[in-house]
Image (cartoon, rainbow, N blue to C red; front, side, top):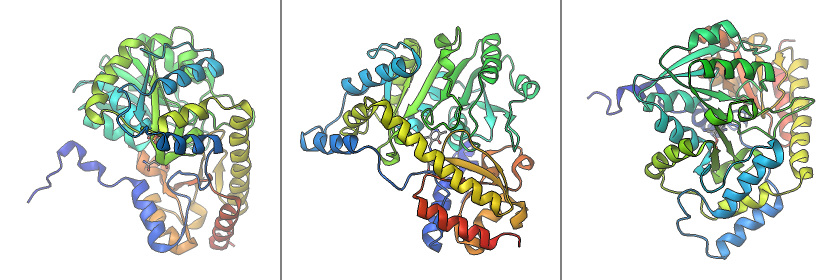
Length: 387
Ligand code: PMP
Ligand code: GLN
């Protein structure tokens, strides 16, 4: 019998994250594949979730989100970026950033519309664009500096462009888009009267002198930009699935209409807890970033010492390395064999590309792990490396 799965979803099968985490479990290898921290977020947030459960907040929350979280998200946008959004009409709480992406893309795109995005792209972008019946048009960010190629970006736009799906800081490359790069994207979006949907889930995970610049802060862009983030990333609680989007009231209302029929509502007792976390002091945000920066340095130094070329990430908790010196020829095959070769799991960057050639030997490693785990993974990779 032919596959029961609709044809436009057939290319998507099982996500690479599920495949690689299952591989790690099966082989006992250290899992630097799927991006999730192995330590917990702020104590105040964890306590607030327990208190919410004990306090009986276990039924459906209101559709747009619980009031204290809507207020906390609005306050966060103003505190960090000077962006003013009305919590009643310009904020929507979602089941992780994943649902925010789905709700807004499904709300804004018709079959025949085109969505411009950079590749490598986060896997749900391609699947969600396909679900909407829209078409993705991409511009490649190339290893090792992953700079925006303005000419190729321009050719990705057309009179069918409905929206640009941007991600900064960027998974998997660790790139933080510069103001000049964002201005190029913004100018093209304005020229084509397109929406910009910007996935900023790693907004607080930036290193060195890198600065996260929200697209909505660029002149004239707040009116055409929907901004997405997630408590899972900022506060090391990926399993809670508390995400949100903010933007112009009419776009938020459109996303809310769709969201009602995806999940209706979600994450009941975790919503007030993330509201508490968003209100914590700058020291808490700073500590999360500085501890990750030290982990980045630990893993990147070790990968370099093992003879790999590494693109130094300026944000996120991922690093992309060229595994050619370890014998990689095809990234997916190499990643599937890496537990046996080195007792470590990484993610092949090629699965985030249409242009396979651009990432033929590139592997993404997650460094949001305890130092002893990173040290042991480094030791194993060095042992497998060229002598
Ligand atoms: N966007 C990007 C770029 C991500 O890396 C992730 C998950 N790691 C998500 C969205 C999904 O976030 P959530 O878990 O909140 O759904
Ligand atoms: N976003 C995480 C990553 O890039 C994984 C999330 C997922 O498994 N869908 O690794």
